Image: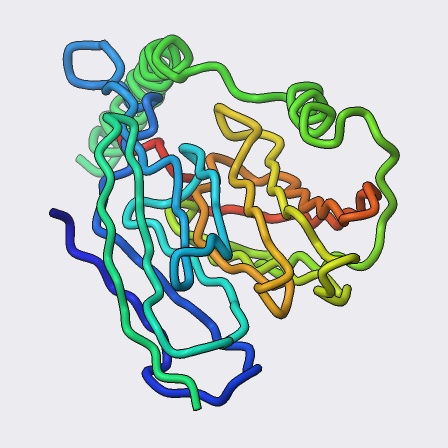
Length: 106
Length: 161
């Protein structure tokens, strides 16, 4: 499990546009980096980030090797109701990591 | 005595120059061999066509915000905002980023829904060279809008080995 940083306001008003900032620890090996023996390091990147709000998908990102190591992505969503915001990252090996954050909407 | 010293330095200077010249030539050869092929403006156009499906793209609405002069190409902050409402019937569906001279022309594609509230995304990207970056937004009505920015990179990404 990689370390993640997720910044979402804990409490907000209904209808407010909130910013979701996400970061995950990952080397994002591009597949273009030569190793000491002359071969290229095999590609291993996070290629997808999906955000769901109470089960409904609100944001999705397809990432390519041009995204930095420890990919940072920030986006917005409308706070509709109290519940859970889930973020899942998928890498080239097919491994998925999901983190959920509770949000309170008044 | 003084004359002799001058002569020796002159001689040493000439050899040093030759040695340096030979060294630079020798260093340039493996660098050219090792470096993977770069994307070209034509590859970027092909990647953009794959995203737009050949549809016409108009400048405007999109604002691509990134620093004009970058010291470290390993991490360049980028923000794209689209000046367009996010109503269910008329919203920004996707925002894509492309580059001209990294090994691969694609950078990222962000898929938005009306629940985004605002069309604004930020991330950090790698730049292998000074180049042009293009941001394209696809609206729900099928139109495409774009913005581009030139970036100068003093220390490009991916050159440390």
